[in-house]
Length: 384
Ligand SMILES: NC(=O)c1ccc[n+]([C@@H]2O[C@H](COP(=O)([O-])OP(=O)(O)OC[C@H]3O[C@@H](n4cnc5c(N)ncnc54)[C@H](O)[C@@H]3O)[C@@H](O)[C@H]2O)c1
Ligand SMILES: [Zn+2]
Image 1 (spheres, rainbow, N blue to C red):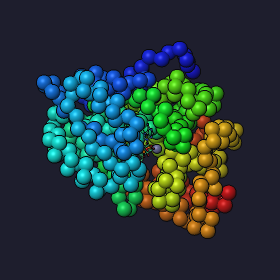
Image 2 (cartoon, protein in one colour):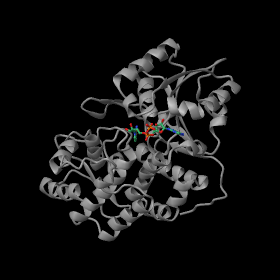
Image 3 (cartoon, helix red, strand yellow):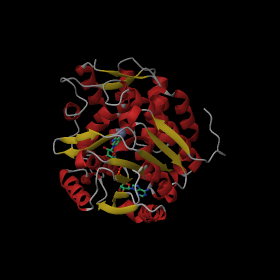
Image 4 (cartoon, rainbow, N blue to C red):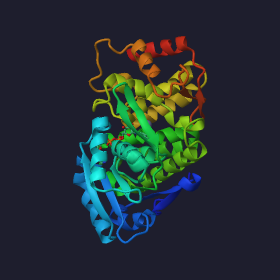
């Protein structure tokens, strides 16, 4: 694993999707240069126009830097600010955002800029995909989770009353700008939530990257910008590779859901509020996926233990009982969790898709799950 702490230049990762290919630019202090970076992907014209969608917290930290840079590049802009948080991924906000885009006279040749975390990326990306049958979106992810995962790959969504991310589109961005420096303002809890998705890439198919994370994860979380940049580049390369091989998730792109079938069950039970961040659910879910792989004699205990110890060393949650405020009233039963998994959007033809592992870096997709075994496993999990 080559990591050179003296390399501080920006790196470009290409998502190779033919006519829909795009660059992910990863580096430090990129937001003040957003204008010149964005200008080449805007349609030619005297004064191109963009609309920035952001949330009220991100706006306070980073909006002015972006708009100053757009001004300096002579790009006309307007802004739409939504309340921070998962609750904004709903029909009402989508309608408000679309109405404001129409009022701002955003036409087919203009572009939407999503400045924020995964919530903004998903909501703005969805709005862009349906406005006038589709306008370009430029993702400027400001959480670690969005930089390593949600801003890349083109999935957009809002939530339905029946479940998360059930309404959405595939709409690849024209450009992704991952500015490592904006992570300075991100609360530690959000950083750790994003870190779970980074660990995921090591677990899927890159054991050397997992080894690197064991060595460097704590420093990365503590604020080391060079290590952050290295990990974001590695993660984007991995995601770009999987997306390019399977844009619409008919096959191996599903590996990116490692830890997510279990994790979504926990999120559903917690009601998608602030009690459990998506990345925290993924952290617990990955440990569960590995322990379930151990229980079904697929994965050696050495690997499940290494994963668990690394997550604990990084102060990440690993058990259901690590969820703050987790209901202690017996509501958490194996039946309830199984029910939530049945609601999962990855269910195809009444079967559950699982990502299991033969070891660190050896994950695979399977539908061949014994429900009895799963119930036995979940019963132990809820009592831990
Ligand atoms: N489309 C995909 O492929 C994909 C993949 C993974 C997750 N997601 C979605 O992403 C969402 C979660 O994303 P998230 O974890 O980024 O949550 P988020 O967008 O809610 O951001 C978390 C919090 O951090 C704040 N914040 C963002 N950037 C900040 C910064 N630089 N400084 C200070 N505060 C900042 C936000 O205001 C928010 O309060 C979920 O809705 C999930 O479904 C989508
Ligand atoms: Zn995720």
